Image 1 (cartoon, helix red, strand yellow):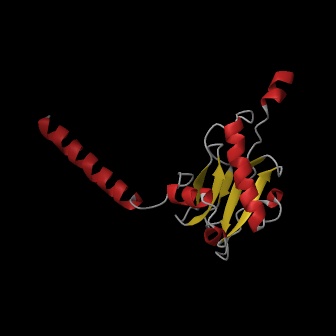
Image 2: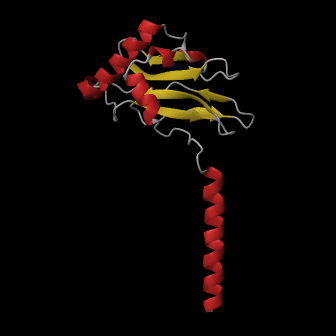
Amino acid sequence: MKKLGVTLYVIFVIIAVITLSTAWGQERNLATNKAVTAKIRAFDQEFFKGFDVYSAGAEEEPDALLFDIKDDGYQLPDHFWGKPLTGEEINYAIRRLDDEYREGIWHIPFWPEALNIVNTKGEVQGYVYTGLGGVVMDREKDGRTTVFLPSTPQPIEWYLRQ
């Protein structure tokens, strides 16, 4: 009986090591990326040049910003995201998204952060800067990923009227 316990323990350790070694160092989908968050909050214009940036929501009340890596052969946003923002529009959208969190009436649950968008092949395809905690996406086996608009939180007044 003791041999069976030792054998099962050894098998468990081997499986754990194999599983962890294959995932070691890979970016996780929708994991917070602190380095990218810092660049976005610092309004790093050189960083922005490598992306097409899209805004979800109205100009004054963005819900999320999608940073799609330019010239990587993939198109992240679905057709509802609209046109990419210009440099000044990106800065304004970041400020407004941060303000919405501070104002508290928009039900943005978390301070906005950059979340990794990783395809099924393990490639980082872009980032979503949001305080909503996640987005809905379709990840295809061939590496394509489509990011859909997040559901829009409503101001507190909307809930009070219901």
